[in-house]
Structures are given as structure tokens and as C-alpha cells.
Image (cartoon, rainbow, N blue to C red):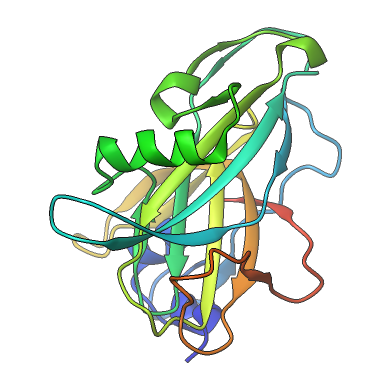
Length: 218
């Protein structure tokens, strides 16, 4: 089953986490999450990501593969922003991974050294005030552990790059009572894996479809 099909048929909390459809009760029709405003009405940062890759790194537990990417963020919003990025990676195997979790600090340090970019910052280092202008652009490194090699589809989500939100009332699957859920404008890019995941070459993963990125409410 494809990743999007898995999202549609999952429970409400998981559907919200995966960023797609909201099922508003068994007796009512499914509702699609709202789309972002066509013209941004809140602050929004300029984001440029470099392709997602996999590299096997030494750890205390032996060699382990990790996903990683680098990106540049620029604040042309007209106001200084307190930047707090949140990156998540979802696979068609049902994993939803938050960047940095189960990633040893030694792996982060070694990847930073390997990439040989003196301006590149870890996820912890890059969080904080983001001043306006091209001269204040920041570059970040994001890392996730690889949890399985037999992956066909990957979705990458980046939040904290826009101030746009939307609030919905949806039923809590545990109680049946309505609760308010805040969705945030989130950057998404999809990848496909041809065959087993290559954990040796560090080649960039293939973007799915047209390769375009998009904004969603999630």
C-alpha cells in the first residue's frame, strides 16, 4: 500500500501527524486538511534544501545508516524571526521520525566535519534569532536514523518556516469529543526509493513525481 493510502486509512492522530486527511467520524464524510493561503498572509522564510542522502556512520553500537540533508534558510519576511525548525521524515513502512532523535552527537559532529562547510550548523545550533537579509542566511544539517532498508516512499516535512496556522475542530478518537487542532504551514518534499535503500554510496535519493516541493497545512 502506498504512503498516501496508508495515511487515508489510519487513525486520526496518525493522519494529523502524517499531514494529510482528517477523518471526521465514521458516519461523516472525510475532510481534506485546508490548503495554505495562495498569497502568504503571515511571515514566511525562504528555504532551499539540498537532496536527501544516506550515509553509514560509526557509532558505539557499530556502523549504522542515517538519512541527512543540508538546507539554507533566509529571512526576507520584513521582520526578525525566532527560528525553531522542526523536521520529520515519514516512510511507507509506517515510521514517523523526528530529526535528531536517536542520533548520537558523535554522528552529528562527524557529518559536520565531513561536509567541510564552516557555515553549516547542527539543528541545536541553528535555532534562535534569524535576522533579516541575505547576509544573515543560515545553513543547517538535519539527521534521522534509518530504521529499515525496504522503503519505497519517503515524505519529508519541515515546519517553523512560516507563521501561518489554521485551527480545526475534530473528534478525539479516544473520547469522541470534539477537540481543537492547530495545523501549521509546513514544507513537504517526497522521495521514492528504487530497490533497497543504498547505505553505501551516499548518492542523493530520487524525488518523486515532478520533484517539486510544496507547502501544506499539517
